[in-house]
Structure formats: C-alpha cells, structure tokens
Length: 549
Picture 1 (cartoon, rainbow, N blue to C red):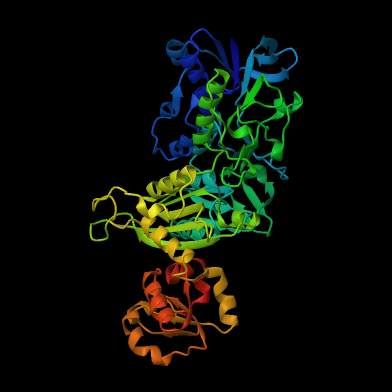
Picture 2: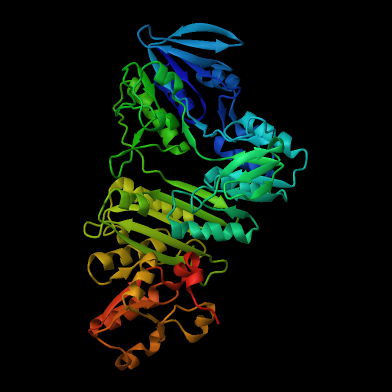
C-alpha cells in the first residue's frame, strides 16, 4: 500500500505516524509545501513576546527524526498542484520542477488559509502580516527588530487577542479593529464583555463594528470605515480563516460551505480513494447534526488518527465535533464548548440559559478568584447544548468537564452526581459545575423562573418592579433604576410592603441570595422572576443602564 499525505502539522502528521504504527510495510509519503512539516501552530503568538523564548521550541519534529523513528518519506517544500483521481496520481512542484507521484490512498490535510480581503493599499503595504506559519512568524519578528511603537490588529478572534497580549508585553501600543460588535465570536455578548473589559484594563483600544477601508503610506496609515486614522508600524490580519481546498475543487471533489471538503463517516471524499481531514473539511456539529467548519488542533489530531485507522480497516467513525476552545487574554481566561446562545436561537431550539458565579477553589483558601459560568440547555429534557466560562483560573477544568458531559450525552440532571476532585487549593466542595446544574434543575423542575439580562429593560417598560436584596453597602457599586431595596435578611419581615398584584423581579450580586428571595416570595403568593446572573452580570454588559451615587 502506498499512501500520500498532503500537508503535515496536526492532522497530516497524526495520520502518517498512526499509519506507520499499523502498517510497517506501507510506503508513506508526506508532501508539505512549506519548509516545516511539524510545528506548534498554536504556540506562534507566544514567541512574539518571548514567553516561548526559543524559536526552535516551536518545531515539534524534523523530517530526519520522523524518518528515523517512523520510516516516513517526508518531503518539505513539495507542493501538490494537481490531483488526477482517475490515474490516482498527484502532480508535485519542487524547485520549479513538476513531477507525478502515484498513490493507492490519498489523504488531504491541506488546512486553512488566512482571510485576506482586497483592501485598497494592502498590496503596497510593507508592514502587514498574517500569522499562520513559521515563515509568517519570521517576518513578524523581523518587523519587530525595528522596535515598532504602534500595532494594529484587524480582528478580535483567538489569534488577534493572543497577538495583542504578546505585543503589549513588548510595550507596543495596540489597537484592535473588529467588524463585529464584540470580541471572540464563539462567546455570547455578555460573556465576551468580560474579555473586552480586560482589554480596556490593559490599555488595549478596541474599535467595534468597524473595519479597515484603506491602507496608506505603505501600510503606516490605517484608514477605518468610520473615518478614523490609525498609525501603525506593524499590522496583523487576523480576520479568520477559510478551508484550503483549491486542489480538491480542481480535481472535482465535492465541496460546500466556504469551500470546505465534504467527507463521510470514514473521512472519504466524493472519491473513495481520497480522504480529507483537519481545517479543510466540513464536519457535523455533533449536537445538531448540521454541517459546520471547526478549525481546531484537537479535532484535527483526532481525525488524523481516525483516518489512518479507517484506511487500515479498523472501525473508526467520524462522529463530528462540538468545538471546544479556550484562550488566555492577559489575566483572564475565556473558554466555550458546544453551541452558544446565538446558535441555539438560529436553530430554533427550545432552550433555557443560566449564569452562575463561583470561585476557582475554596473561597477561604488564599488566592481564590472568580469564575462566571454560562450553561445552555433544553428546558425539559436537560440536554446540554453548550457552556461558556470566564475567569482568571480554573476555567479550563470546568469547560473540559462540560465538554466531556456533552460528548457522553449526559444531561443537567446527571451532572450533580459528578464527583469532582476537591481540596481547598484546587476546588470547592460545591463546585461551580455542580452549582450550575442545581440551578438548571431548578428551572426544569419549576422551582425557579429566570429572566435574562437582555430582557430587563422590556420588563421595566411593562411595569415590572425589581427588588434588590443586596446589603445597603453594596448599593455604592451601582443600582438598578426604579428598584426597591429590601435586604434579603429583612424580606420576610417586610412582605407587607409588597403588592401581590404586582409582577416582581429579584436580584442580588450574583444570583444566590436572589434565588432565596424568589423562593420566599413565590411561597408567599407573589409573582416573581429571578434576574439570571444578577447585578454582577448586568453591570458587566450594561453599566450605562445603572445609577451610581
């Protein structure tokens, strides 16, 4: 058997090495168009600041090492320019010469390319870069050797925010321009607001709902859509990526959304002898079964192993992905898994949402920090659609638990039974994951009725009244308009001040005390809803709607 793998890095190298472990006699050739076949793509931004000190640390494997251990024929700077499916051949360009190479099975791991729109003045710019490969990084590092003072990042996704942090560590002024009204598209608006606030705290300027209209002076002037002009010594385009499927399309393979390659449960394309994996393929969103694009290293590595198993006759199926991701932004971590609330609404799925606040470990143990966790689920079955979390520490642990639960088909009714590791330095006896599930169960079982932050102003317009059960000292942090202040510990004694014909909303700082207030009021015959996420969440996303002394 002769297998050609087009493209290395995560998916391609996982496929090639797994194939060798299963097939000692197979001829395995890896054709990589760039100079490096195995490097840490996700680590590139951290070399900019020197957090990853040595460039060589980013080079995971060399062709020589892969040859010695796996007997792989690794050919760098070899670009596949054509596929001839009927002849089972690829045409390969190397040093300006083109030759044919035959195959029994072909694996396309061509990845994705950065989106680079046609912006006037871009082609003349000398300081505008993307960051997708080691050569990209080398160009940026050369630019940094000239000690730039001002940088502009176009796009506030994962790469944009990681680069922003690492440029800031070099004492470079950073401006981010983002077409969307928020950072980090996988997050919902209120969760992304925590990240925006962290950027502002770190003196990073962000211009939302804006884009670049023109580059001038060889890229040193960046003219925005709103007319604003930014000075830039270094500009990074991080506007997202799109599948690199040119050769697949030219070969007549079936493609779909944004050029992604269609594959079946065995990773076979429309040609049974050609397989595809990684950022170039269309996958199933495992929760909805809908087609989507998920460009992440973990799924690509898994797909590489699975396609090798499939070619080798082992029963491994492409079950799809749920899109679990995480990013560090200065002192904050943001992570998500599954569907966000926007996607759930677009799919017209019946859903409920809860936000809970907690600590990364026992609050009485030194160094405890806040975590805000959002859970999206079916209001009757308890199926978990997705989760998001932000905080300084411990976010990864919580999202990983919930990602595992989604993959395992657990519901919110199952999660309180999870026995998570506990010791004061590491967690809490009532972990925030467990608390989120208790809260979700209260919704499902009718023990609580919540209202979301974005529904509050309409509720006020309809005449609903908010009861703030925080202590008097907490009001200095801000107050809701037209609210009643009744501290929780006084509520039972002051029920006579309330009208049973009036609709109420209760809120505290994070939602725990307001839930207690809701139970008191409901069992005394009052019509009441609990403001999900309470004051802390609302102030993060709508501080301008609050009153301050």
